[in-house]
Length: 117
Image (cartoon, rainbow, N blue to C red; front, side, top):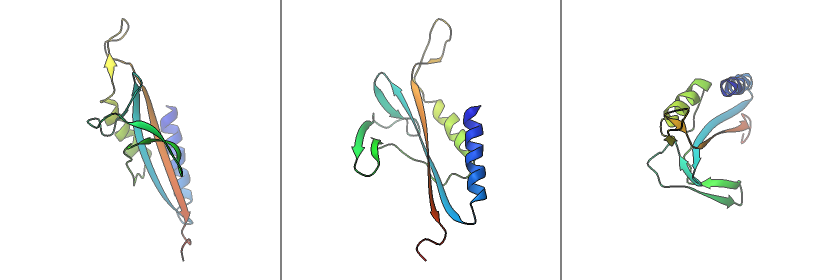
């Protein structure tokens, strides 16, 4: 799907810049259900709140991030594990229909290899 294609393109671009830049890829995955926000990477945690951070702007306070990701496949494994924790409810068309919205956030941080020398 589109997510896998996008992630493959991202990591291809990171590989092309490997000689010039240091790159860190992190991700978080949350669910919005009945006006509540849950961290799908830490499903046993309490509900989360949206806050305004002076540096980041609007963000979800307390969301967990998994860093050090080096491939689209690693992110997809996390995504599949986290999807098991999504809220579901039966409907007339589907016994385990997801009743929530899920948001995968991928953060890419880069700096020149020569920075700080």
